[in-house]
Image 1 (tube, one colour):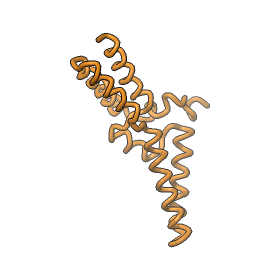
Image 2 (tube, rainbow, N blue to C red):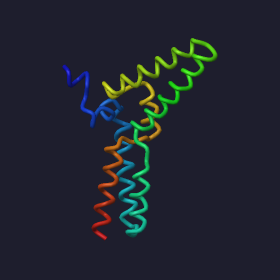
Image 3 (tube, rainbow, N blue to C red):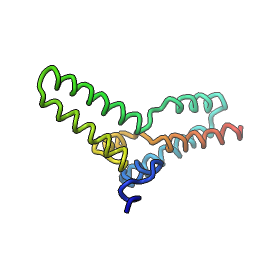
Length: 134
């Protein structure tokens, strides 16, 4: 019961993402690796460096919800207290995501193709293997 309510950190996002989105992301990872089979070591190294700076789902979600919380808190204090409801809602979403691995904004983030850290690492691992083979 506890495991169902609070999934493992490494699998919480994928477990709460529809299969067709997870599969599309996996296909994109495989396609990216396939494309680099024909590239030289310099291009592979450049792609690996790009991947070091790719924002994962956690970073995108945390940043967006923090911005929403900050702006709505400022508005709530200076304009209209009703804005505090937005801050409260964003905070609930952050807690829900931290505990369960899902919240409403995550669906949009995943549909936009934002990957988890583990998915980014899958591509890195595949590219590192190609790099070593060259």
